[in-house]
Image: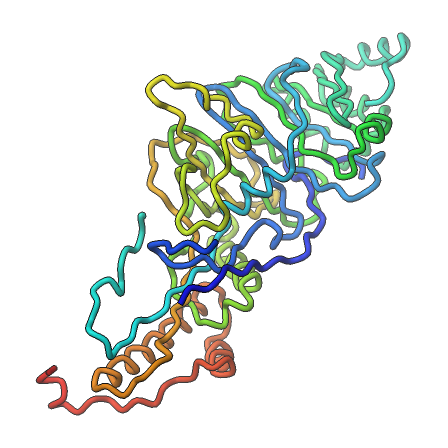
Length: 449
């Protein structure tokens, strides 16, 4: 009865890093069913992906970038808490982020009903949850100084030219950026001023076309930075200055303590472990995107959703195998070699937010918790028994099956906001009709044997 996993992939759309200011433009017999499909980041348009490795005050940030325009048009500015040294900046491996996304994506699993005519096996309902460009000339440097902007550091890392800027006032920084070819949207100065008041510096990156050609890099690689700061936060306000409508953000937080949550916005776990009609298998991407949109609307776009929280040493069911130590190290997990107390644990939290300026006026502030309870966004298909139903127990089974289908239809309507009648019609069209099973006579309920 095993079925091999089927992946549902939608063509990726342009991915924009929303937390930054972009100025230019083998099936496992798992206890909880078999993995069927996933709701990975590719389902969502313009989804920014950020990996945050955090322990104590140390943070390693990886920003996935799927910029599809001309490399010469790419540039970004990220507020950072301190002046970064060259060794604190790195270019990452996009495939590792893709693996992390696949590992933690919401998933569709399936069960198969046992033969209702066979002796009852109590294992039927087993376990539920185990489970910048050229160097500035002297004259330019004097202009910069007059504007209160200082280039604290300058590096070439991979295909990127990177500057670390400090500034005394937002107007001077704004003028500096414009003079150096950055197209600033209206309102940028005010937001830059907010970060300046916090004493933050600015990480500014552009593509070095010569280095890109020399390295043979076609798609821009993720940028990584490592720093220490007591503030565990992600700046999103700067990215919203030139945002066009709602933004999509996926945060993959890796700690060794436990689950991560936002401290200044409400956290909600996505509805999970819901049984849905079988036809959802063929349209899981449509289901998941509709379900997420409905939950966002239901929460008035004022929450951050937890989609996954899990000890990364294992998974069940596995949408993708756990990451290797080599992959974790590439993401910046710096305690893997720390054998003291045997503390090499990596706990992952996947957070998903859809946001705009009206509903998320502040940056995301995070906190680590001691909660290590596993959680996954999981949706369940239950296939009915397809064999002989000539035994006396078959009538009861068919009645239960009919009730289950009705419940699945209501659950799908509640999850997605879809019309219940349309769901029932879709179920019937796909071979899941209501079963016309007569209710048992009153005396048939007295003696079961």
